[in-house]
Image (tube, rainbow, N blue to C red):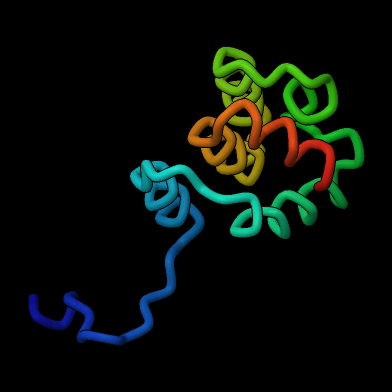
Length: 103
């Protein structure tokens, strides 16, 4: 069983699902500089924001709209959109608005 426990400082790669779970468990409010490149990368693949369109393109920044976008992303199998939606949910409405303008 000891072989399953990483040694201090040992790199342990996360699977996509593991990364999603780690992000969901992280309840602190992320800063825009921490997430901007990830949102830009998603936007470059989805020019009208894909699953996040209702929030990032249409400017609906309320939590209910972010939750709707997360549900849509999950329904569409858009793992990255769902992860980014979880990040948006932890941000303030002001942060969401600013991110939508600069990403």
